[in-house]
Image (cartoon, rainbow, N blue to C red; front, side, top):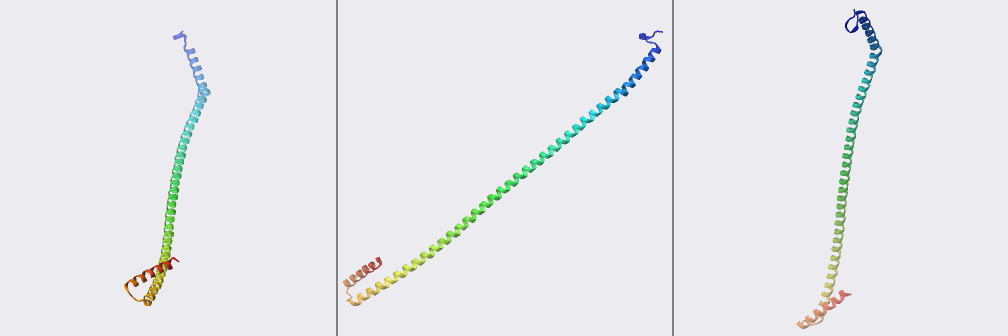
Length: 167
């Protein structure tokens, strides 16, 4: 009983049993360890991907934090610059006001000094005028009052008062 392709039923059953035993051995000793190794490798790859994703998220968070701190530092720097400018402007204005006050004080002092000098000059002129008037009156009383004499007397008195002022 030679069957199809030279196989007989007992030899076919034997080969089938051998195939099933071999398949069981390969499954037990080959497929399961290989499957386990592939599953472990798949798990490691997945964990690496998750770790890479977590690292990427951490990097993005850290970068956002750094940018936030840089922005904050810039704002603080700008604020400090603005405060310095304001302080400088305030100091300039205070210096200007102080200079105005000092200038006003100097002007007032100069005016007071000019007023004293003017009063002094007016007093001196009054004294000179009084002296000149007294001198003229003495001359007028001591001489007669004709018109030519009177004119000469006034001119002489004015010349003498000018000489007194020159001294």
